[in-house]
Length: 483
Image 1 (cartoon, one colour):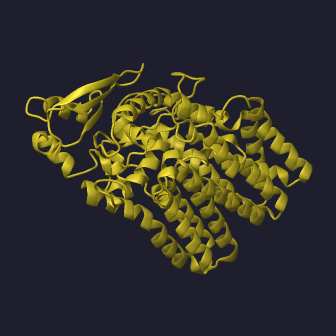
Image 2 (cartoon, one colour; image 1 turned 90 degrees about the vertical axis):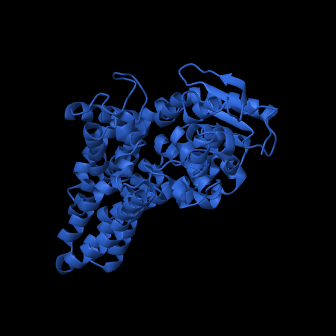
Image 3 (tube, helix red, strand yellow; image 1 turned 30 degrees about the horizontal axis):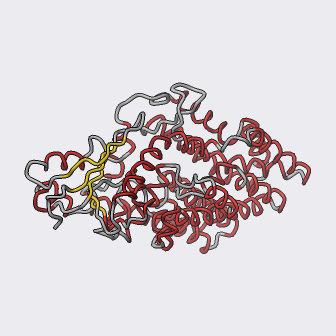
């Protein structure tokens, strides 16, 4: 993983994904903001990946390069591979299948990329594969330690990605079925520990936004962003499964999916492998359900509308394929080598192309990266070292990260009550030397409406990039004193 972090950092692709940029900057604003603190974790995205970045993101160099988020991801992805190795070794009883599974998981190019950038997948894989290991261990030992471990892993997963919420009742059911005379106590212990994650997030949304389900139905939720717009797979199980399978082919390759399926069946001839097989099928099933019912489209270039969107969700197939590889590797080292060749040969044929998840990030960020570079050039030439900025969070924050401008020097919609005061009386409360607005956003409206009563801002530069909203950079009028 260290080599992957170094490679993707050297290519400049660590923060191609808009989500990676956002995760990094959410963590930064918890400690560097006009209103720092827990509230800056926001809503919709779960908090644990951001909290894990906090120890490093305080360092300006690690923040500016994105390494503050890449390093925790690498460690977590390696931890997930370790849990997978331990699970397979326990349920199949040999090092060769375990090593095959870990290699098939960790060496997938898309896993290497997601483990080298500030995304939530690494924390999710580590948590869910940890949950799998501890539940498997409990099924064999009926000891209390694995129950606590399973609860902690499930809690961490539920604070990382929402598919972990989907897995909680299945894990609890397994503990109940396998628990014998301890089943009620074991389920109770697991439920209390694992349930802390969802309870914390519901309480967070209720306290800060007045609605415990704000993350699900608020203005930044997937449901609100997608709205009622149709997409392939919405309310259609066949298309939902088709599009997710096509995404899986891009992430893993068709030979790997087929070989993995055969391997999972082969592994299940061992009774101890049945639970891991069931568990690892659940995340892909969750995503098919999400496409069908939860306003979560997945677009692939080979099908209409021929786009790149949410393809990374199909990395949910990778642990399942890796477990299938282990099932075939039970027949010896030659079988292990053969299955790894089957898995990685199709991917290596496209070695001149980046992994599909990186292609998705690069394709979707091209315009954003162009206007970010242009805005950085303007402010680097004209802005002073202590200048402050009236702006918005989100994509715009890449400008200030690139320039190394502390986020406490920016005023955004996340800095209340000051932002609300500026909205109501900009002539009294708007003091910033610069305003950087995206066409049609709240900042642009405030700056334009404030022109008659003050403060007055002069348009320095309008940046236009095809397919992107315009970026307008304003500077406080020289006759209008800076308070």
